[in-house]
Structure formats: C-alpha cells, structure tokens
Length: 213
Image (cartoon, rainbow, N blue to C red; front, side, top):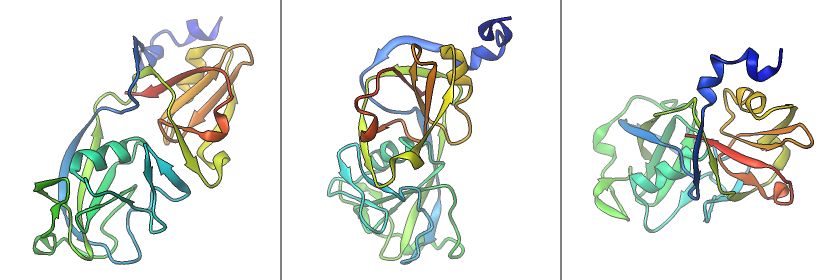
C-alpha cells in the first residue's frame, strides 16, 4: 500500500491550502498572562542562535528591539518560530520563548511603559515583561508559501533532513517544534524547519515550501 493510501484519514491534518501565500505568517490568537519580573537573566530565550529575522536584528540579549514595537509586531516575530509565549519590555523590546515566570509572581504595577508603536498598549517595564500566550488557530494545516530567509549562527540546528517519497510523508513528519517544510520530490528529501523561515544556507536548495497555518 502506498504511503498516501495508508494515511487517508490522518492526511486530513496535512490538508494543503490551494492558494499560494506571499506573506510568511502563522494565524494565532493572543492572551494576556500578566506582568512578570524578567531581569538580566531572561525567561524568554527562544531567539537564541538567531541573528536576524523578518528584517529585524536580534540583539545579544535575545530581543528584537524596534522603535515601532506593538503587540502585533512582537506576535508576528514570535509566531514565526511557533513560540507559545511572547514578552514585551522597556517599550521597544520583544522576546519569544517556551516558558515564563521563572523570576517570580506577576506584579501588574511594574509594567507601566507604553509601546513605542502604540501608546494604548503596555510594553512592560524596566525589569518586567508584559507576557502573552499565543494560541495557533490551525496548527495541523499547512499552506504553500513564498520563501523568506533569516540569519542564524548555526544553520543545521534550525532544521533536520528526513527521507520522504511523497509530500504527505514530509508534512506528517513536521511535528513538535517543526513549523515548516521544504520538500524536494526528485531527491525524496524533506527539510523539517524550526521556523516558518529558511536559513540562508538553504537559499539554493530546490523544493516546495510549506508553513503551518
């Protein structure tokens, strides 16, 4: 039996949306979790190893810093890696990660700085972060997307390769921290990617690019 026949029911989770998407983005909803202390030893360290993404430089302290920072901008940055949490601090900084709250209980009064990009939003305080949870609306669906690249210090830590004779096989192996795939049918090669972005190392690699919705 061919792989595509064996997974007839399961393949529904890998339904490909026919429309080709030019924008690299995941669909999510945002929930405010509180103002948590976050001093120099940061809670949200998901951007470790990333030098730049979506046109923004990642600072040495693992934040994207921008004069137009908003909830929406930070969400677009963190959703590129499928992170469940984002934090905003000192008006202009965005952090992404897998856990939060390691430095104590929330204190709402400590987040008193308006976001530089939207004065009606609060972007943390001097040593505290406004923390949000990100829930992805269609995590088991994929859409074909235009390629967008990002810079990392160790490219091979941001993807791994597996064999897949069919597209569905490739997509079904994109689980856990996998956010996208680059599939080359001719080579039966499936790149499983940790971001909905491609490390620049893969800019000459042929294949179809799909990201999680």
